[in-house]
Length: 76
Image (cartoon, rainbow, N blue to C red; front, top):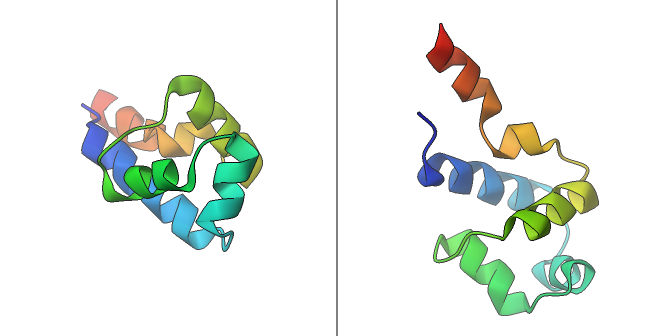
């Protein structure tokens, strides 16, 4: 089973590795910089549309963020 904690870990990993400032990510997603900070702290999770836009902006497959590779392992 996939947990929110696993999704959060992937989300933080991708945001930190992208090399783009949180303020630029916030601007592109039309959210406040503090919202991005909340995502990184795990206080909040992005809405589905925001997550989709974030993945598109960072050129990351949503399956990676949603731990679909882990879900496939659970089926074995």
